Image (tube, rainbow, N blue to C red; front, top):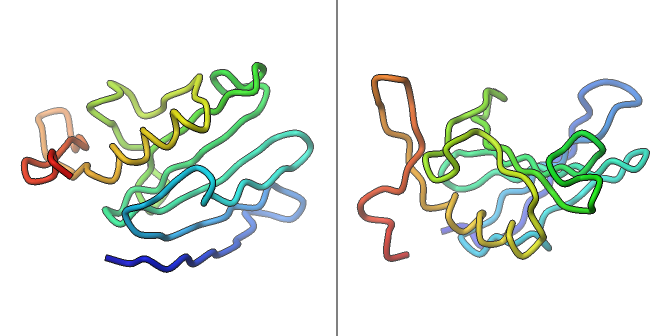
Length: 130
């Protein structure tokens, strides 16, 4: 298990919000995510060991953003959104930093499984007790 912290910065285009990518081990917390603030919008991106990339945002269009809460979305490394069975969606909003900590712990335990509707990320049988 990787325990070090590695941050990588990548700009999508000039004058746009910077994306931060943070790869850490199983003890991932909201406080470890580098949140970039750009014109009142906050954005952070974290890559989990299972391959999921989790975007955390707070802005005027995000679920809960106008109330100071966060929204998180799950993506593959190519940027495509993924369906999280526990959320029954690809995103989850109205989250406090403490809620994000709980969601990140759950998300780290997920593994992709095939279903008739496509790939679904769900808790693997061997991960439930972690």
